[in-house]
Image 1: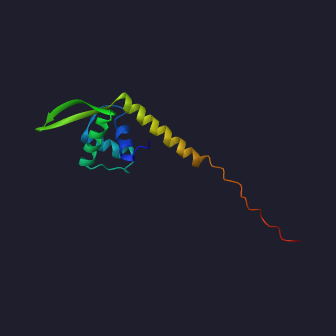
Image 2: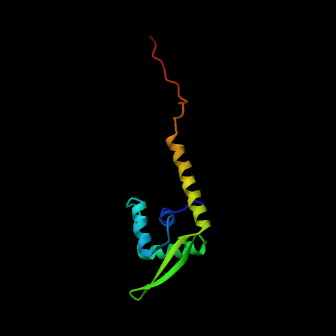
Amino acid sequence: MRMREPTYFILAALQDEPLHGYAIMSRVQEVSQGRIRLATGTLYAALDRLSGEQLVRVVDEQVVNGRARRYYELTDEGRVALRAEADRMVEAARIVTEHRGRPSLVRPTVAPA
């Protein structure tokens, strides 16, 4: 199943280390080269869904300025899903980048000499 672009970049943001919500939003913007800017509600809805799918998990929770700050990390299943989507995109790109063109079925007409 094809992964939506924001989901892909959320998982990609978590490849190296656990991050809290604001850091995930910043990393997503960085790794997507500014293409993806997540709203807070969108991010947390995605994290809840990804947690339910066991692709991410909460590994720490701290209270900062009276608010809970949860740190998320990729699960092994999340790493597999991220890699599978990256491989799928590489293969999809290969179809275009290695395209040599199709020979024309129409034969050119030669004008009489």
